[in-house]
Image (cartoon, rainbow, N blue to C red; front, side):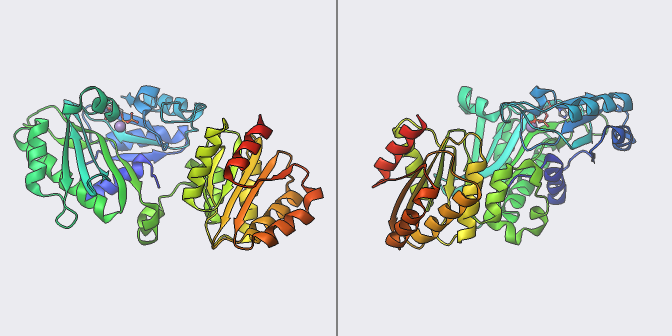
Length: 399
Ligand code: GDP
Ligand code: MN
């Protein structure tokens, strides 16, 4: 699960990471007063207007704007709320922007990158940091891997202060910045663990220019990106409440309600499979025969007839679907449940596209019998003998 930057900033502030004040607005009219409230105590009157969408690359896309007056804030809000944001991290037609964060702006002396994620190879959480912050970290990793510093985190002891200090020195922090950076790293690592995160990223972490009040500058977080482990949401009530359904793919959302594992893809062959491994194999074999899957769908072992019928509704509501492949190896899932769901979907929605069905395993005879009886109602249906045959047939039918 993902949350918006303004929610991530709240979590950072709770954890003790210094974050400039901000206000969320959902209309152009609110922008001026939000600007005034976040700059009321600032000499520079600088603020930043930022689109709140579940995608990065906002800065380059023009959806992070520095403003110096209520009028400029209003103009920036007008632009962002009336244009879709397109970045390398959004779908090609972009994302609608309905919420903006208006935050107190800060002067930046230098930008850093700081994140915690899980490293599968070492089975440890890992702190990743770089003095080349602000830009995409993938680019830094590719072009200048030496500029990235990593520290593995012990699962029981957590990030140790000496590790954080080592990172701070490697990044080039000096004087009082070191203590501030160390405190932020430890706070981020604690939050990562406590909140069941899969990613906690501050890009950029910044240092403000030196001045009389802060002779070494201040270390602050001015962006926040958090991803969470969905399986932990039952014990993360506060995070779960941050869920924003409007940012999710509507079909994936429907599937989740029925306990289906559905991921939309951009091909033309809809797949309905039981078991994640078989679903992956099915997608591979479709590719092998020259087709392209329109989705990943694992109906699991315990899905009811209603849930499987819903799965067909979801697949058939996708206009890009030109053929459907059902591949069931019935273990706990019974073939007759799948067959009955096919019949339901045929009655309700109708299979106007070719349908290829491969059934094996528990109650396969009952399943075949149900389909045999309904054959005349589903003229586009073909049976397949095995997975290879099924993939070949559906790819041929789609063309
Ligand atoms: P992203 O592009 O979606 O990751 O959005 P960010 O929040 O990281 O903002 C992009 C860039 O805008 C940052 O790397 C900064 O260079 C700049 N920026 C954001 N907030 C401020 C601010 O308060 N002051 C200044 N001077 N620049 C900012
Ligand atoms: Mn950023």
